[in-house]
Image (cartoon, rainbow, N blue to C red):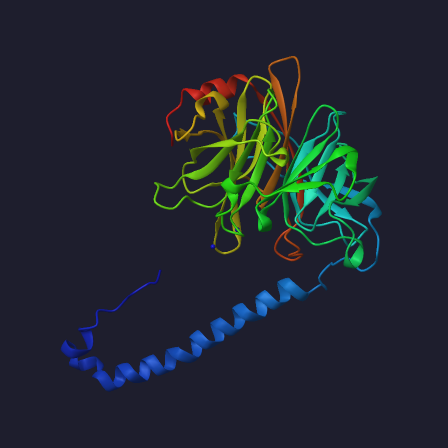
Length: 370
């Protein structure tokens, strides 16, 4: 989702006669200008390469249901720098033989335990669990989430999805500040634009959504709230947002410049939040935070606690999707998927499997904000 460096005192040329006067400074400035021009041209060329080479993968035929074979290649040598909180149980690079397989922006667990990824190109795809070792090819299906349009579907910016026990699916559309409900996968479904989200920026709108155990809905915005101290808008809806359920607003804080890009509700009422931040040159940082939904009350500030960072050799990418498997034991399995943003050179689609103890969440609850 992105100073200047000043050197050489301006008075130097007036006091250091041995190195020349203002005329020499003008010559040096003129000599530097071509360098700046070439740097700008180089950045433009790099941007063009990222966008156009290889050719952008866009829907080319009128298909609403698209078979795809997903290959999963283990990331040999990948590891986590922060050992302790998470154990890296698997890491894979995903590729699909259908050109529509890219830009996965959200991940959810269906009632049957199947992982379902959504893309900011209005596609949903079931992600089979790959074996830990060896390259595997897994058959799946891409399905359009929006009503039919050019190319079989409309390009809408789907960022997150959640399910009810009966299989009803909800997803959020960031560019429209909208919530869509699909009953049993039927399209086009029902859509609502909650008034509480009307003023959210188009590119910093609803990025995270979770259905809470009691049937309420949590939606988080990615943009900082104006007039507040680096918090993000959090809405808790009393029921289905598509049916007009009223929300209350709370203010979520993540430490160290992270923005919320995915949220998952656990059975005990705790919420996991996937945070992301961007740095140059083309580097992402990801971390997982937690808070208890009982902390979220109208007009309150909730400071999410850091659980752990996702960083290490071979793992840097733009993680936007998170799904969680809860067992009867003290273990959690967390799945993360990265959004390639159709940038085939500098980004890729990675799938991570993390194991952790639920006790680590209790420890995080008592830890100070770093």
